[in-house]
Image 1 (tube, rainbow, N blue to C red):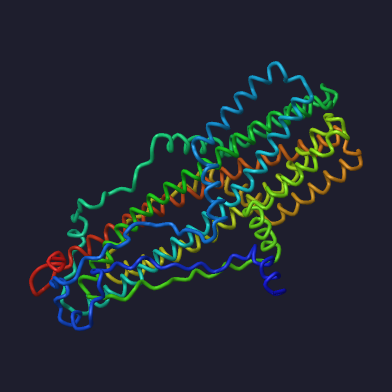
Image 2 (cartoon, rainbow, N blue to C red):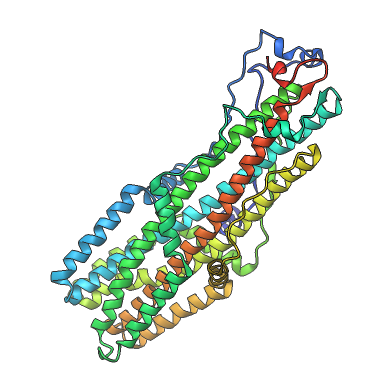
Length: 508
């Protein structure tokens, strides 16, 4: 029992091996007997019923009702209704700020609302990233699983010397009405979101953000470094942070939906190729299970992932509710003053700052692991291409040579480093010590609110930059994988039986 408890608390943070097998394509619902397989009349057997196979991409449903519920909450957070509700809320805040903007209580309440909303979105974005990593690594394992079966069956078919391989021109000229030449197109809303993300995550936009921060600092002496001067930037970064959080959740959800559509198109072609090969070879061996090994982790990176897993299970939100109850309980004692109003915002802001550093680190590391897993799947494709001597299509590369890409990539790597996370934690400790020395007065709490708000807004922009870079790579890879599978589909469909008739006659 004690070991089970230790194991439960030690399990978060470990990125274990992920395994999957592509759904096997069956020719018939009933199993084919060895006699039928040897007779060579499998396709003419009328007693067998064609199988109803899973041909497209199907995401795996998680075990446990709580996990499924949490995933629905995450999906809803990135939905269009939530996005527009948050935009409407920001507009209402802006208009109400005209009559109430000069009130310190108004600024404190807005700071609290921003900190709590950002706190929620930190947890949701963390879980969204963890889910995306697991799904994309599982996709890579599934792709490798089917390619292994395709290799095995093609070796059997070509070794039989019964079929003539088509020429490259025949493959290129073989078009099917079943599959289009392009992946699914995005809606105009998706295209508009992608352009907006390109602007928000651009290196130049981030530079403009810091120019605005330095202009605000320049007015500090003019405003006598007052609490009102501090509240101005706090309100501005609060609005910006809510906008970026909701936008980031929305574009990530759109990205996931688009990837699923693309993977469905890729799996459809892949499964059709597998079915044709099974008809030609009579092979009924299931697609093998492919295991993607766990990535190596250092001690501190494991701690970061542990924290990310805890946040991703929304445990932090449960802690926030406990803090909210305590905060409400001390309200009468503090006479509901400005200092009391800022307490909850201070707590959520400091935790949110740590979450911002961790989010960027986790995004970068998981993207690296996804690329490694996908690289193995692409190696399988290359191996099959070399084996049947059919060249793969030329890959469209993302624009990695631009100045914006190089600067953004370098900045993202620095912000994602483990040392940067350590510096973020030390900053939070320093802010708490400073506010404690000032006895948590209004000014002391503002010191704990404003730097986290400024820095976390910056890190959210970096997250958009990281999303843009990884999405560009994914789109190029998806397009290349689809074109290669269309070429493989043409190759298999044009295999000619020397005894008379091609692969189409085998299907009949």
